[in-house]
Amino acid sequence: MILTAAAAIVPLVAACGSEKAGGDPGSGSVAVQRPVTGVDWSVDSFTADGATQRAQGKPYLAFDEKTGKVAGRLGCNHVNADATVRDGHITVGRPATTRMMCDTSLMKTERALLKLFNGKISYRVDADNLTLTSTNGTSVRAVAAK
Image (cartoon, rainbow, N blue to C red):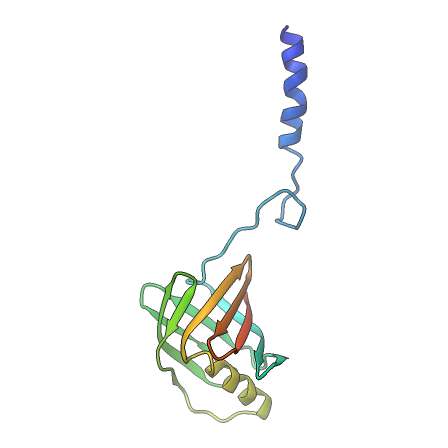
């Protein structure tokens, strides 16, 4: 009887330790879901006026739940604004930016990112990836800074 019970338990115990680490698809483990706040998000690309482009100038955004602000760099200039994160949406206020002029490619990235600062933005976090989409159709893809 004890031998039969042990024979039944061994395969179950072995199966519990057979998962792969890392959160890769099909690995059997779950990737850690990051919050949108408290993370520096490096902007990778943006879609504006129907065209997707790589972001220039190492732009980033950071949403701070405690202060109710978003701060970052838009490619050329620094930005900050009021920001409330709630229920899959971010409501942003009017942005304040520095006023430097930069290379055309940096300014193009900056103009596209400023289009996010027009009210309500929906967001989706998938592991280390963040997608922001404004009501005007501008979308931004960012990755968690390492």
